[in-house]
Length: 195
Image 1: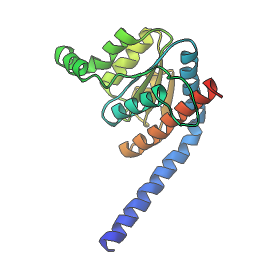
Image 2 (image 1 turned 90 degrees about the vertical axis):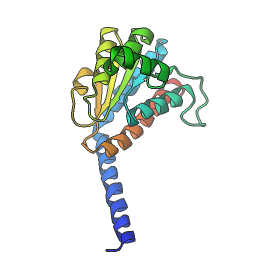
Image 3 (image 1 turned 90 degrees about the horizontal axis):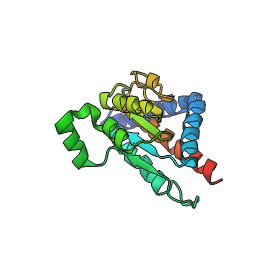
C-alpha cells in the first residue's frame, strides 16, 4: 500500500468512525432536547448561559457563546441572547490560578456572575476535569441548572441536571460530536424563542 492509499484508508476509516458515533447520538435526542429546553426557559425568565471547559472544550465555550450573542444562521433574525464563556478572561484566569489554584477558576466566576435561574453548560471530554466539576458544584449550590457534555466516563454526568454522553472514549470523536450537539442546542433554542 502506497502513502496515498494509506492516507485514503486513514481518512475513510476515521470518517466512518465519526459518522457511526454521530449516528449513535440519535439515542440521546431526548437529553439534547431537554438541554435546549433548560436554556430556553432560562432565557425566557431573564437568565443567562454560562459555559466552561478546558482546551478544545474551552474553544467550544467561546464558539457557543458567539452563536448565542451573535447568531447561529442568517436566516433567523433575532436579538442577542446572553451567553458568557468563562474561559476567555486571561487576566482573571491567570490571577485566580496563581492565587487560589486552577481547580476553582470557573467556580469563582460562577459565584461572581451566576444567578439562580441561569444555566451552566459544562463541557469535558473526560468528564473528570476538577475545575469543571467544581463549577458544576458551585452552580448547583447557587440554583443554576447544569448541562454536562461528556464522553462515556467521569463523574460530571452524575453532577448534572441533564447529561449528554457521547458513546466514545476517543477524545477527537467526542469533541466532533460535542460541536454537533452544541449547534443543535442553539438551533432548538432559536426555534423555540423565534419560531
